[in-house]
Image (cartoon, rainbow, N blue to C red; front, side, top):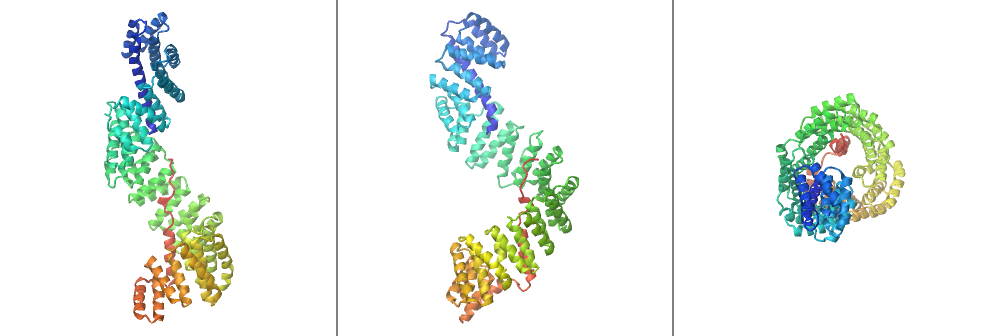
Length: 613
């Protein structure tokens, strides 16, 4: 709410000056001054003739230079004329003449605040309160300054004291409600606001409705918030801030109310149009977003951010062709990696695969410092089964970005598809070593150990062991090492590996009881050791956690058959046949894995949005 501060301070100044003027009428009666000179000057000031009023006061002050009433009124007149140095001198003389009266302090404090000297103004209001603890003007003035300097907790006691003496006073209630709102006390703020009557002045009435809307939002009363933002905008139709708030609250509604929004203020800047475009786009109000992004480009024709977001808005509105045309023209005029990358993703969606590859390549050439561009290029190759090219793209990316686990995973998937199992194992291990929590590396590793030959295993085992020692409490690491040892032991008939594998797999399910694949592998281990009851329990838990695990049903059927539980075995086989997909064609399986990996990559829409046009 800081954007209201300037207008509010002016209102307070007016309040202080007016209060001070009438206070001086009372003071004047007790002084030995000439009433006629004061009254004449006062009426001239009220009539909008400050220069004539000043001349009258200067004449009177020649006769009575120490008259506090005349000096105070002269301060008010010179302040109105913008002669702040003279005004300050007059108010300080009033304080000197009447040190125990609040009026001089109040007017001086208001003048100091208007000059941006907030700390001095606050100190001066405090002196007024010290002399007159119940002085309404001083209480409101100090409370407002503290509120504007974000000292809300300190402001509230002064504003509450002023409110208790003048309940219903608009300025006091507004500032008190604003401070309470900032202190996260919306219920108390609403109680105050409900006792206020909106002022006749459109500007202040608009600010009142903005505050009531903010309080309503804090109370999750979206209907009232939207209504009051609309009222505020009707009163101040050129306020960008109010319109922005109205748009935000309208987009929060689960309907298409945004189609009924009034037009935006005229003569907005490029940055303001861009901000509105982002807001409308975030609420899927793409037609409005398009309008504002297009306006941004009219004002800033070379704004890459506006082009980028306009293309996304076109796509969101179902006009992908317009998005592609826009981006093609932009990258021809001013090549930009981010725009090339987005263009490529749109061309991929449109089935323009060759064009997509060309623009992904162009993005990498234009900006080799972005990991995303290498990943997108490699993923495009993967998606269309160009595995050698994918290996090259991911390898180049991994050299530049060795901390990117997904680049290693992408390389490994391509090498797996090429049946380069040792290289794939190296890539997946590199991904796990980079980030053992990466789900892609974990899932990719699961299907790999059975393809690794003994000679290659001698290179893999030490790395897995070091990984397990480095992350002793990581369930995925324990599983990966345990599953690899299990498959190695099963293929070599080495009984020694079963003990370590069992320990690691049991540790994995202890660390993460919901790790279904760990229960599945543990079931395989128990079955291998003829511990049928444990195997049945592990396969059953794997099925409970992952009802679509066809392999768990198949393994369970085998055990039941060995135990001569033929009815149960047939039941599990039936379930397996319903769930199973063909795994005989290894290339088809690889394609499925690759597609899942590629589609899981961050989309262009999820990319970071630049906030400046």
